[in-house]
Length: 72
View 1 (spheres, rainbow, N blue to C red):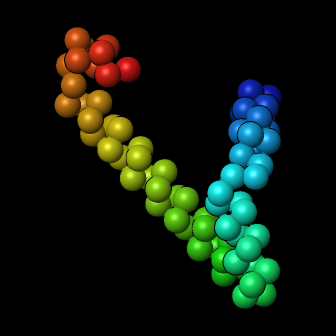
View 2: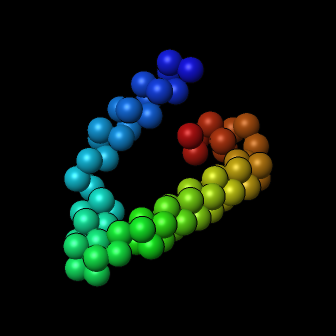
View 3: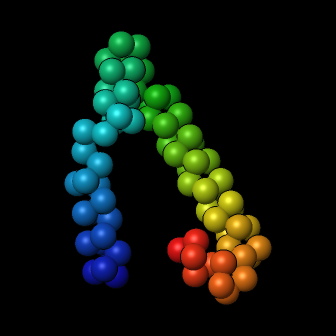
């Protein structure tokens, strides 16, 4: 559990100030409705990661050992 918390904290610190966070701040300030904006960003992020995981799993299943070694 410590490894998960440590890696999550490191990634969270690394992501401070990225474009998505800055966009969320600007949109929340402009429209004064932070909850729908944050939920929209959450849904978009989950969809993005879900698609990436699906494609990664699918492509990894299509590659045999030699091609997989070169791809990774």
